[in-house]
Image: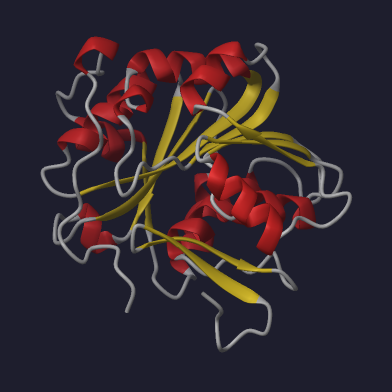
Length: 263
């Protein structure tokens, strides 16, 4: 769907839910609030402009790969998207610019991750939804272990998830990553964190300190401000949640009707 306010901007929907927004003339413009938060993480993982090796699980209209290509020229990026028809649609109607350094792959995210070389990525961005839910095989500690293996020692994992109170799914995800990474952060709107509504939550994990102060400044300045939880506050949020084994894994919860609709 074209955006009437921006000449070459497009909204991609999947099964009626907004999935991606792309401005072909200004790829550094991030329309969705959760995408802006992912962008803030990408901006703060390394000094400005430094090229990175980035693995994206979930492609959509390739909003974030375009963003990285513009803000960090020379980056090498692989994008894994299971929906091959979607890849073809995007390639035809929203083509990547020449020299973007982005390579799309039609494959399952977990299968690709398990076959990827160890220590091969500076950043792993996970934004995989089957419809409006994260597939079960991408919610276990086994999946998290593969993500940790693929990242370099100073690499950063960042994922877009969605949940609502009592946060059984989100707390278990954080508990799983806490077994593998020393540093964790959670970015979400205060209303979501207080359990007032269902919404997106960005999880960040690393072996080295995260610049949570910079993330807090950036997210607080957004049109819809978010809060960054880390340290003792995040440990309290996780509570007694346990990591999810592969054999017990379930998709993320079904959003309430209208949670991610258009208009």
